[in-house]
Figure (tube, one colour):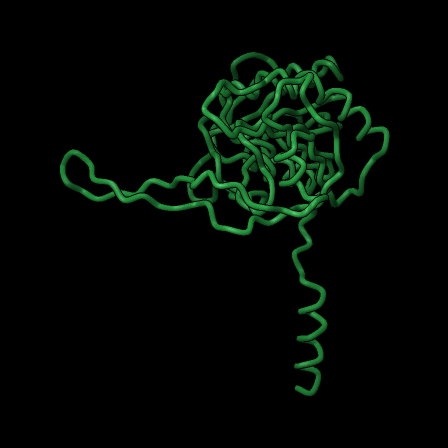
Length: 253
């Protein structure tokens, strides 16, 4: 099985080391194509107004001067053009990708890019709720078995699997749960105004750090309670009830 590893934290990110370690538990044909620099929050952006350059570090490790989607696109169509991957793994992201975060996540975007190119794709993220050292051992210990089970079970060709690991040591994980995408009951993102040393105003995004009160069965609740969350995601964004109402409203036109 040929596995392509990518991420949004950049080719030198610590989480990518964990991802490669996980991939090598599954196969000896592991490749890395990741963004040259951190691209957190890049969502599904493609680099359309600038050239893209590929840098090779060793025969199976490359970086791309672009976004996570660029990295997967170049990996599949250029670097691995003679034999495309059987599986794409994206991550392990330094921070959770749950609830509404999935729409801006570059980690999940890399998986979606792989999915649109016909390659089964999984995004993996490690939750962080403190400034303590990230618990990389948790995905390293649990991910190989989870991925094997996912591959055995299979999933639809238009779905990506979003796996989030709790901010707990491997032995303290409270289980594995198939979840739905949640939604926070308060906006956490804010822009703080600051001044540089010349008096110019700039803004820096931050998070309040307040936890929401999500219902059972959501990715949020699973992570808050120390479980590994596995959520199937897809790109179909049409709201069925609204679509039906609009069809009725415009039926006479």
